[in-house]
Length: 74
Image (cartoon, rainbow, N blue to C red; front, side, top):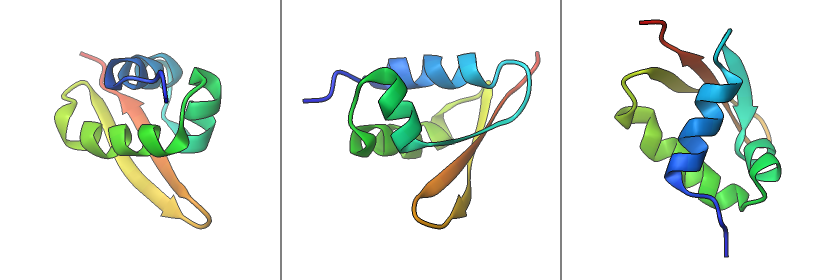
């Protein structure tokens, strides 16, 4: 069972993209958070529409989806 929560994924995204846009994959995030890539991918899809302070968009798909993450400066 994955110990990754939606809250930890959100905090990770904000931390990583704090200074400039960042490109990430679910498996990289899962590896850093000690969780499941499948769970992280589900949270990324959910967070894409739910975050006001973070721009999260699917950027490219080769072997896996790359996500572009940018934190709004307000």
